[in-house]
Image (tube, rainbow, N blue to C red; front, side, top):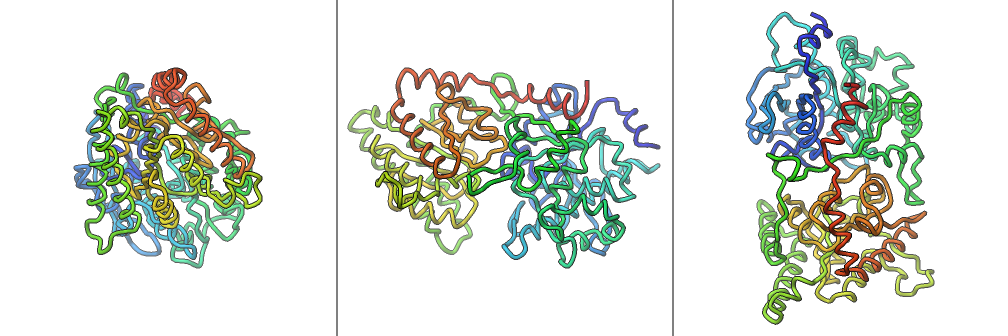
Length: 570
C-alpha cells in the first residue's frame, strides 16, 4: 500500500502536529506555543481539518491526559536498541482528534519539559531527548504506512505534517536524508517558528549529545551537500535543528506578519534589534521561493468559541487576588528546604498591599481601593521579555534623575509619584539571575510585587484587574499576553516590534514605544508610560479600553490562512 493510497482512503485532511507543548493537556504548558496547540485544532476543526498532536510524555502527562498504551516502537538510537512506548488519548473537546504521548526514560528529565543546559553544554539534554522523539515518530509513521498488519499507533494516518520550533527540526532531517523515511516527503511538511532565538544547536560529533551520537548511520551516510544543510551557518562544527526545520520543510511559518519581515534582517543586539539570529539567509531563500508565510496567532473569545475553557470577564477584586497570591506563594514552598529570597519579599509586599487596601476600604468605602492604578505583567523571565527594563542608564545622561538607574527603577518611581497606592505586579519565572535582581528592586520599592513563578488562575486575574499591561519585549514573534489583556479590556504598553506591532495600535488600543537602540527604547518606554499615566481614567482612556476589548484576533480567521497558505487546501 502506498502513502498516496492511504491519503485517498482518508479524504478528510488530517494534520499531525509535532510539538514540545500542548495546552490542551493539563501540565503540558510552558509558553505561548502550548496555547497555539490548544486553540488551533479547535478552529481547524470548523474547517473540516482534523488535527492530532504528538509530544513526549515528560513522565507525567500520561495520567493527566487519561491516555492508554497502544504500541511500542523499536529504534536504533545512539548506537543502541531503544524502545519507546506510545500512548493515545482522545481530545476531550473534539471528535476524531487525538493526543499521542511518547514515553521513554530520556524524556523524563528532572527539570520538566525544557532544560537549556549550561554554558559548557547548552541544550545537551533537550537536544538528545527530542532527537529520539523525532526518530520514534518517523518510525511509528513508517510502521503504520507500510505494513499489512493493522495500524499500531495512529488511529488515522495524516495527510500533512506540521512541526513546531527547533524541538521537531530533526524530524525534517530524517524525512529528507534517512532512506527509511523518505516516503514522508510525499506528505506536505510545514515548520512553524515560535521563537527563533532558541535553536537547539549541538556539535556534529565528539559529544554524547551530537548528530553523530544520535544517528551514527545517518551521519556517516550524509553527503557534503546534505551535511551543509544541517550545519549552523555560524558554527560549522555544529548541527542546528532550527535550521534543519527551515531548510528541509516545504513551508515555513512565522507567527506574525511583522516578525516574518524582521527575521529577514541580521540581529543587532547592541542596537536592541533581534532578527534572523544567523538564519536570515535561509529565511530569505524561503521567501524567494514563496515558501515563507507570516500568520498571526489567534486568541479565544467567549462569544465565538463556545465550549472552551475561556473565562468570561469577571469583576475580580484586588483583595481576592492578594489572598490567592499569598496562598500560591505558600504552595510554591512545598518540598523546599529553604524559602527563596524573592518569595519572602513577595509575601511581605503582598501583606503590605493587603493591609493598605483594607485601611483604604474602611476609610473610603472602597472608592480609593478601586481607583488605585495597577500595572501588570505576565510572562517568562528572560532577556527577550525584560532586557529593556534591566537597562541601566548612562552616568553621562543630561537628566540627572536617570543616571545609573535601571528603566524599571525609574518606572517604579514614576508610578509612586502618580499614585502612592499604585502597584506593579509582575508574574513570571525563568532566569534565576533576573529573578534575584528583580527581588532586590522589590525590596527597595513597595510599589513592586514580583512573583517568581507562574499560575494560570493568577494570570487570568491580572488580565482582568490591571489598569495597564506592560510588555516591553525586545523581540516578540507574536505574543498572546497582550491579546488576553486586551480581551479583558486592559490597555497595553508595548514595544513596536513583531506581533506586538501587529496587535496594539498607539492611542487607539494601547500605547506603543520605539527606539533605535536599547537606551532610546528605555527612554521612549518611560515617556510613553508618562503619557499613559496622564491619560488614566479620562474619557479617551475609557474609549481606548472599549476599542481594545472589541478587537478580535480570532482563531477561525487565522485558521483559514493556515488552510490556504500553509496546507494548500482549497
